[in-house]
Length: 397
Image (cartoon, rainbow, N blue to C red; front, side, top):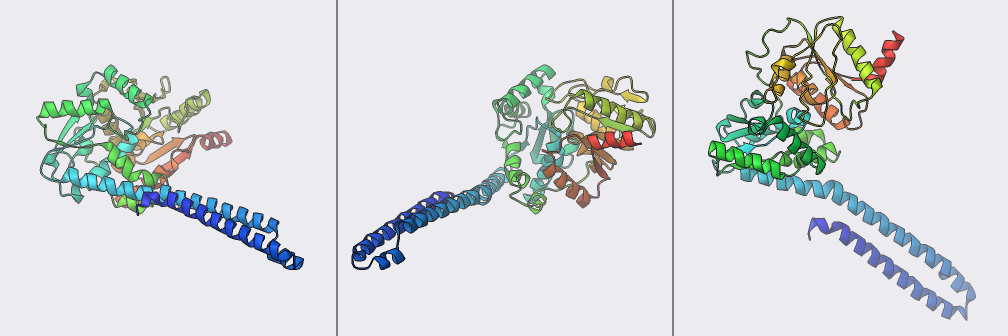
């Protein structure tokens, strides 16, 4: 018997039982009515028509409940279990032999990359005893050092595409409904083909991010506990390049606020963020990590004109923007920013972090995972603040 047929089997069985019970009761009713010519009282006691109808309704309701339970069991237990088995089998196939492995391309959200993808790759490397020399990481923004010890080689997608072409392709992928890279899109396959050609890796296997998303989806949806996530990840602090971000103040706060579901772009949000950054700038210099590049769907909040706030846009190019931002952040005394993206990375770098949100609907599962991950790896303090509460405290003060 195939497990994915359970809902159908349960539904059919319940319906069959219900029909048989109803037929049996109807037959008994007919017998009773015949007998009732001699004993009306017996007919009333044994099976009045109303009782048969009520019992039939009860059986049908029970069948519906059984069907729904079977469907929930299929959706939340059987389907995730089958998908996990398929993904783990695919990972074993990718790891087998000694062919190179292209991991990526990672071209979507920074937050998922640092909080899940890189730790997942570290686990994959250790689980299958793969040397970094076999692995080629493909990402964007100059983040080769994030993959130190995991991949021996790194290729940046922004070295393969102009910023405009990259942004256009990314927007087309999002418009097609593939925000999370669940399946390789045509553009991603083209990137892999380009990497194969440039590095002479015609026989390379590909570990696409979709496998990681499929494996952890049951955790994010609440069908699996955090223990499953932590048995398939390995959290460790990245090694920051020794020459990172020269010429910075000895003490400063790094700030990175961007628009998105957690911090929708409204006049009120902009006003509150400017006030919050101004308060931080009264205590220490502030370096804003806005880029002005527009490579994804998020847009940076700008703090031009706020006293004590500097920016480093002149140090950033599309191919290095994430490298500069994360290296500056690693030197900071404090990081304050939108809850998401680089805010997940900064505690791993030993930087106390204040992550701000106005809407946490899509954050709960990730906050839960992040806090446990930080505790396991001895990361820096991570605090979460509701922007509306912050504004109320400011007014009260």
